[in-house]
Image 1 (cartoon, rainbow, N blue to C red):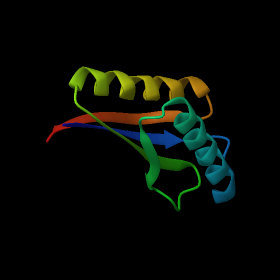
Image 2: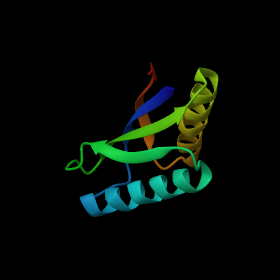
Image 3: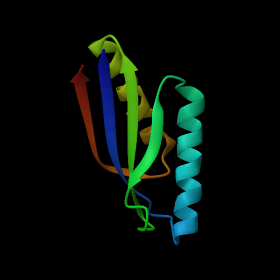
Image 4: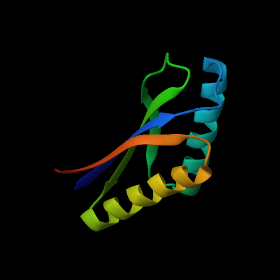
Length: 96
């Protein structure tokens, strides 16, 4: 079993309140979930900051290349949305 994890540190220039940020996060999460049926995604840190968010994306599979490929696609998809700036990203693969 292989667990793939993607951590994204996001910055929202257009956000002026927590409400704005939460609407943007909800939109990103919904779009990712509808496009990538085999991943889980959630805001995992910076919940009280109105221009920053940390998203965690997880995937369980049996192949490392597949996990890397899907997580790269999720990263590229969020980046191409153009609604936030990705400050940092990190992919981690765990073999169980």
